[in-house]
Image 1 (cartoon, rainbow, N blue to C red):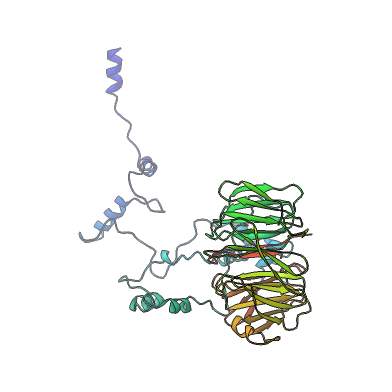
Image 2: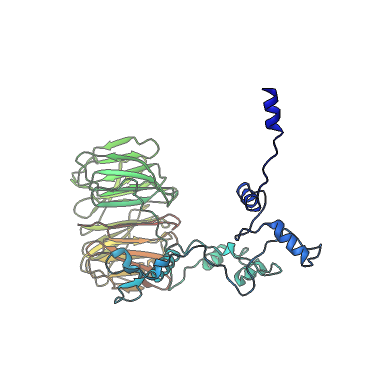
Length: 469
C-alpha cells in the first residue's frame, strides 16, 4: 500500500495548455481581464515591448478612445421588426406624441418608455454621477453663485420666504404611492387628514371605518383601523395636538379615538341641545388650539372644548351654515352660509366682526382660510371661487370686491384648501371627473393638474381621493 501511494505521488502532473490556464485565471480571478479576455499581464508585456516607460501606471483605468462611445453588450435584433400598438391600451397612450399615432417600432417604443420613466422620476437627480471636468472644477453655475456669497444664508426670515417662493407658471408634482394602498376603503372617502407632525394620516368615510396610516410615500403601512356600527362617517379631524381623532355623522352622538392606543370614547351628545345631526365638523389647529365646532340646525354653530368635548357657547347666523373654518392666526372663526353670506366672529368676545355677501354667489358651498389668516376663499354652487383679503373684506362694507374671481369650474365646489404657507390653493368638485385645479395664490393664476383633498403640514405630500361609480 505504501509502495502504491509513493508511485501515485511521484507521477508527473499533466501540463496545462495555454487556453486552459487562461480560463482558469479568468474563473478564479487570479488575473484581471478586460471585456475581450486579454489579461493585464499580457497588456503590460505588450506595453513594455512597445517601449512603454517605467513611469506608466500599470493599474490605470483605460476608457474608450477619444471620439468613440461604449457599445451595448447585447442588442435584440427583433426590436427593429416588432411593432407595438400604443393606442390599444390606456396605459400606453401616454407614450404618444400625437393623437393619430398608433403603431411604434420596437426601438422607438423602448426609447419612449425610457423618456416616460425619466419624466415620472424627475425628482431623482443623477448629476452626482457626472464625471467632472479635468482639473476638478465645478460646472454648475448655480453652485458657484451660492458659494460666492452668504447673503441668502444670513437673510431675514421674510427674505428666506421670498427666496422659497413658488414659480408662477410651473410646479413639479411627483406621483407617490396611494395613501391607503395598504387598506383601501370600501366606500366613498369623506375625510382625509394629515397629523400635525406629518408622519400619520387618516381616512374615513361611508364604510363606517376610520383608518390611520404611517406616511412614508413608499409603503404607507396601516397602523390600525376602527369600525363603528351604524355610523357612516361624514367628518373626521385630528385635534390640535394630534392626540385624538373626532368622527361625526348624521347622528346625535359622535366618537373620539385615541391615536396612541386606539381607545374609543362615545360622546352621547350635547347637553341642552336637540340637534339630530352633527355631520359638519371644524377643528381649530395650531399650537394652543382649544376649540372645535359642529354645525347645528337653523344657523347655529356649537363651539366645544377639544379637551373635554363639552359645550362652551354657540354662535348664531341668519341662514343654514355650509362651511366653517377656524382662523389659526387671528383667534376667529369664519362661516359661509347657503345664502352666500360670510360671517367672521371673534372667539374671545363672541361678537361678529364683519359680515358681507360673497360676490355673485347663489349658494355658498365651501370655504378655506390661509394659515396666517391674511386670505380666505369662498366657493359656490356655480363653481365660482372668490379670493378675499381679510382686512379689505372686513372694512369693505356688505359687498367687498374680491382680489380674484376664478371661474374655471362649472360644478358645485366641494373642497377648498390652502397649503402650509398659503402659496397654493386647491379647489375641487366631486360632480365632475378629475375636476381639480391648483391656484398660485400670489399671482392668482390657476394651473390644471374628486372628492377630498388635503395638504401635508409642510406640503411634502398632497392627498386626493376619487370615487368611481
